[in-house]
Length: 62
Figure (tube, rainbow, N blue to C red):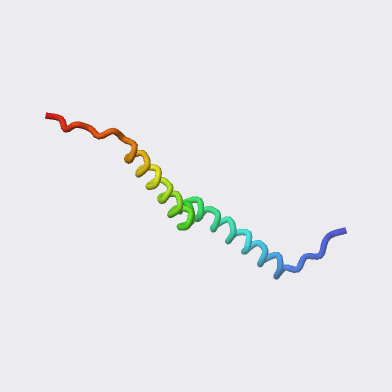
């Protein structure tokens, strides 16, 4: 026996699926959220400062 389908619900479901696929593509193209990006940059800056603090001073070349 066939299943009865409400066409309005099927159309809305298909539209939601298309919108979700488009948003996933957009998220992949535009990268990570701002909060994660800021946290990653802060961690990189902290690591760079820690490395620079432990670096031996270099003598100027003549």
